[in-house]
Amino acid sequence: MEQTISKEHTQRLFVAIPVPEHISRKLEVWTRAHKEKLPFRKWSHPRDYHITLQFLGETPAAKQEALQAVLREAKAAPLSLALNGAGTFGPPKAPRVLWAAVNGDLERLASLHREVIKATRSIGFEPEDRPYAPHITLARGFAGSGEMPPEATVSAPALFEWEADRFVLMRTHMNASPMYEVIGEFPLS
Image (cartoon, rainbow, N blue to C red):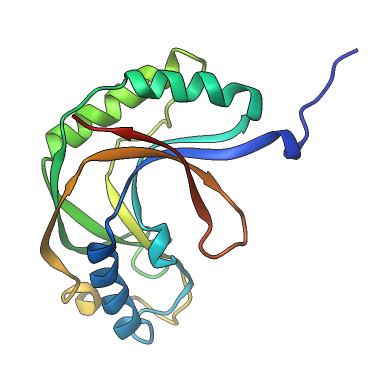
């Protein structure tokens, strides 16, 4: 008899670099000041700001111990990162995502992304089938009429720097705010 795993026994997980509080505050101040000019349906809670390394999806609870073990093996040095303006994914008339750009040690960030993919692949996770594009999601679902003005993101925060000294395993709590919970931390050293 085949048994299916219910939603109670799975968790929606992803691996990410958390954004420190002082950077989150800069982004929060900017988004609050621009919400009327940038009518998106859903704005990210400032405690949810992060840079995704790998989306894992619905993961059986029984697999979490092995997942944390392989993530502990992914090695990388701390990264110097900085905000670098903002942009969107999707067509100008209906962008899907408003994001903050990151700059800095992007090659080392891409290397960490590859390390995480390699580690998680060893226990059956597959990477997404699209190029890695590091960013911080600020909002989703443009709800304006007409095209989003290109100059709307010109004043987005830039040049604010931080050192990423860890990456984390996060769990999603759908329809909650904030919606992400750190369930594992992995130092960069």
